[in-house]
Length: 455
Ligand SMILES: *Cc1c(COP(=O)(O)O)cnc(C)c1O
Image 1 (cartoon, helix red, strand yellow):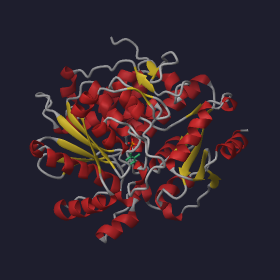
Image 2 (image 1 turned 45 degrees about the horizontal axis):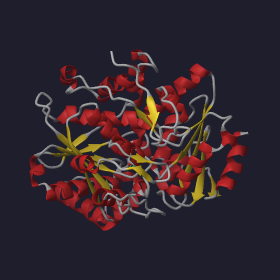
Image 3 (image 1 turned 60 degrees about the horizontal axis):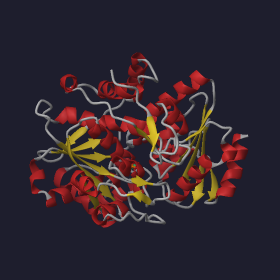
């Protein structure tokens, strides 16, 4: 039996807590991010049993390592079945290179995977404690809709979503603003970073202490644990498990929550060869990996892959922590990370908007594979990696498609002159009534509005 997992803060000024505590707090009181104090190891004698298992079965196997104190195995099993009731296709593009489509959930982005499991964990905790929870979350486009859908009409939970007014697509916005009930959405006249700063400020504000306030952002550890599952799933579907064949993943990255899911799976023993971290024009991480000097981008640049317009990824503090360093909440490197190990494990590459469009065009023409801007950044990352490591042509590589092309119809139409087919999850959206209010990127105003809303 593994010893119980505890979650410490990357700033290490508060004592470690249980998963339930970490889920409810979101961010630690010292403004650090929670990290598991050790990682349970995948059992190779059992893994082969899961080789062609369904997604819910793999999810149950992986997540049971984390939820022993939270729920019974039967509860976890039914959560996995309910949450993952959609397809998780692996599409072959070339002989050994695949696309993992994480876009078949109810809001058509990979964020459904974490949000749907987290909603079940949170609502379970609130029922146990007979309390009300306020989920306060900032979104660059897809978190908001995934969280809003996952928590819609869940008793004992109210959701407030902040999004950057001019930086989300029409359909992304409609997915959040047409729900109503316990879901409230506010458009901020600013960037994603402004939204995130407002949320972080509220969490640290003593005036909100009387509420159970939690974030469903990827600063919440509950977002990362379920995101380790699809890496294990892809591996089990494609790799020679008996030989422990190594695999490389390419991850289109913004706030680095997705890539932290891969890091967790890696630390649990998944034989990962390399992680390709593909960013858009917000290239603070590729620069850092090259120079060793971290400099956040303020304000963040506006790129085509809007969910990745992040100039200072919150989860970078977790990555630096894993490599022995300390990055504080302001983006200051207090202790250096092991850059040699980081460069061995990670390949980081920035992809311009022009290349993103080119990749969408080329992948469609050459392979009849339809990508959207985020997945195209990931695929361009694979191209860059293979260019520098010709061996990788024959190695198992999986690139993540993190959203459905129909979420970005204007771009796809412009680049390919086709209309991406609408998945069932998005049909009817354009006709529903929206409801949201607008807010300046100013904490005092935001605070007043939030207090009124919660009163
Ligand atoms: C959020 C998002 C990303 C970036 O994921 P991070 O975990 O923030 O790195 C990439 N693609 C899409 C479609 C997203 O919604």
